[in-house]
Structure formats: structure tokens, C-alpha cells
Length: 305
Image 1 (cartoon, rainbow, N blue to C red):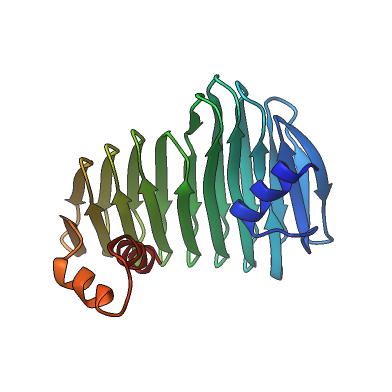
Image 2 (image 1 turned 45 degrees about the horizontal axis):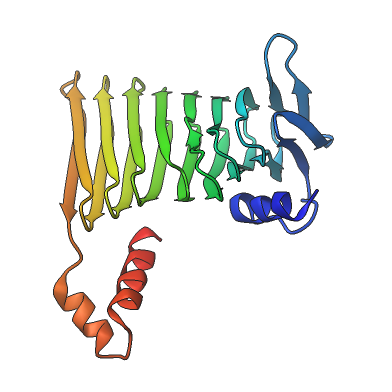
């Protein structure tokens, strides 16, 4: 790999060398490296671009890295990745996409990820998006995540849009059965004329299942953000959706949280807050010797953690 590709891997997957465990690296539209283990198999799809990641039942303390990097201007990449997590497995999956666009054409990646969690399976899924521009072309990412959770399964999903993504529509849908738990944490920052849209839809079908969906975002300059979420309580369940946003400059942020209670024992909560950085926070940090810009950066970094 060249220096640009290595930098993209560091940004999206914290990789400085070949990762331990199973991995699949996709670069500029094709697979370039792969490793499987005794418990984790990675198979190329025969009918469309993408891979199947098959994790055996009872697999513990193993990880899978599946980063995607694009360093060609004008490349539009589309992949379908399916994850099959066996019963009682407990694994970490590190994904993400980085684009370095040095030309005048738009570059993009659309990743359709489907998760199938068997009974009592546990997954921590981390996905980072990062872009760098040296030309006039845009960096476009439209990730779609589809989650199916069997009885007693647990999934924690942490997604981060670091910087440099000009347009993104992020769609996530999930269906939970009895006792399943889903936790989603999203962090987004936009600047310039960027546009970011998030759309969460969760069906709480199982008895005593639950979902906690939280988004934190910062919108700068003239960027636009739209947050939509819909949690449907179809059984005795608990659901919580929250959107907190800091708005700066001439940015625009819209939050549309929605709840549907279709069972008398469904307990659902939504929260939404949009506002500017408090003046007293800036003053407090500036009295410690920080400039106004440094103080803003400190507040934003703490808010997005």
C-alpha cells in the first residue's frame, strides 16, 4: 500500500500494521487482502459484490476487520456484506470507509451491511467514515445497515463520521425478538456545504427487548443535518431515542424523533436538543489561557466523545 492508503487505514480502523484475527481489506473497488481463522470464515459473494462473514457458535474474544479505502477520483463502489453471528458468540467487528479524492470527479462508497445475530450472540460493531479532498470532487457515502436479532442477543453499534464526507444518507433498520438489546451511538460533524442525513427505524417485536439510540452531532459553516428516528414498540419493551446537536455559524439542523406504541406495555422515550455552545463554557476555558477557537474545539471534542 502507498502512504495515502496507509493513512486512510489509520483514520478509519486505527490500523498501523496487519491486524490480528480475521480481516478483509477492500481497496479501490476490489479485495486486496484476506485472512480467516478457525472460527471466522470470509467468503466472496458469487452473485454480487461483497462478502459473507460467518462466525461459528460459541466463538469468544475474536475480532474481524473489514475496512474499505478509496484513493481514486470518480470511483463509485458498492458492496453487500452479510454477517452471520452464531449462537452464544461474542465478537468485535471493525468496519469503516476512507476516501481520498484528489480529482474533480465525485468518489463514493455505498455499503449495505446485514447482521444476523443468533440466539444469545453478542456483537460490538464499530464503523468510522473519513474523507480527504485535494480536488473539487465530492466524497459521498451512503451506508445501509440491516439488523436481525434473535432471542437474548445483544448488539452495540458505534458509528462516527470523522470529517470530509460531503454527502451522506445513513439508514439503519433493526428487528428485535424476545430479550434482545440494541445500543446505537452515532457521532457526526459536518462543515462547509456538507449534507448529512440519518434515518433509524427499530421494531421492538419481542417481549422484554429494548433499544437505546443516541445521536450527537456538530454542524458548522453552511452544512445541513437531518436526523430521523422511529422506534416502534410492538410488545412489552423499552425504547429510547435521543438527538443532541450543536449548531454553529449558518448551519441548519432538523430533528424528527418518532415513537409508535402498539402495545399497552411498551415504554418509549424520545429526547431532542439543538443549540449553540454556551457562552459561559467558552469564557471559562478562555480564562485558562485558550483562544476562542481552541475553547470551541475542546467543547466539541468533549461533546462528541
